Image 1 (cartoon, rainbow, N blue to C red):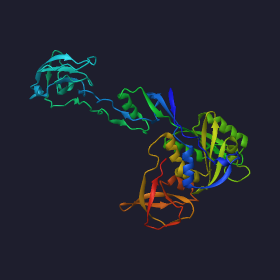
Image 2: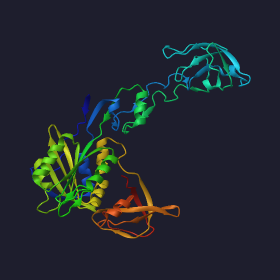
Image 3: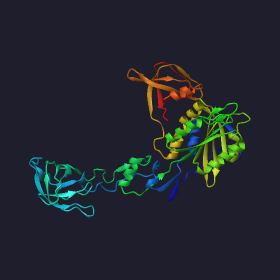
Length: 432
């Protein structure tokens, strides 16, 4: 397997004059600036030359171009007999046209033979039609003759024939660069005779929850606990964005355990997402551990819901693994992912379309976007007459039930803004 590497400079998360290890210092940042910082840390990485079977799910790093017309010559659409269509005129089941069988068409022939007038050539599906023949009679419309054949239906010119270039014209792009390769795209590559493809492999994203209170869903412990839901959600969002998630079970707020979990996962991580463990409490260890492993900034982010985020970089041999730290609350983590992480994951995958498709709708209720921050307002979408309408579900106090019901987000801010009933608002579909 040969490979090439894009050569961006190593992501620098802090200014050069402040690059001393700091055990995770604090900074304030606007959402726009944080998006830029995350984008600088998460860049498309390796381009690999892989076997066709290994390319499924990866992102194509080249255009798939048909070198010649496919097929290069007219071919039979189905098994049958190649004929000149005028030789079948008037043929019916009661009064068939009888033609001599000139030969059997073979795939081993370097070039199609010339068709014999007033004859038929037995031909398999996909074989080149003899020169001069302009139709293929299906087997069901014949008596399956070997030396002579009865044609029981007249055919039109071009019937039963796929013309040259039917599948693709020479020079046309069958699959453009940036496409995520699925079954149909793999089939197109195989039809072009491509045994290998240049791709950006599916990024591997490790997702870790941090918190003493967390337990796995379905588990129990004395004194209770909180079922860990956030990383289950984030893993699904990572998968929907095009990457491969590796969810790690909840890790306690213990510096040694968290460090061990992170170091164990770096070997398979192109990116790490952590949730929780970012507050100023004495038992929150994420900033401390990540600051000791590499570079890390805890960020008071101009985004609601969810204020405390983080961004870091951990050296792992000859590469650096970016770490994005999200709040532990499912609602805040989901909004942070939509606000800036999903876009970065799509870029990491090499996808050309990194933003969700926007649409516009009318507000059913009034709400206020506070000043100084970007607010993501989860909404339910329905129709009001012939117009799309949205109902807000709350931001800071978004419940799990509302989180599950929301199907779009209205973004507003950082300027203060009042959305009144009937106002048109810009929305993005909240998939995943």
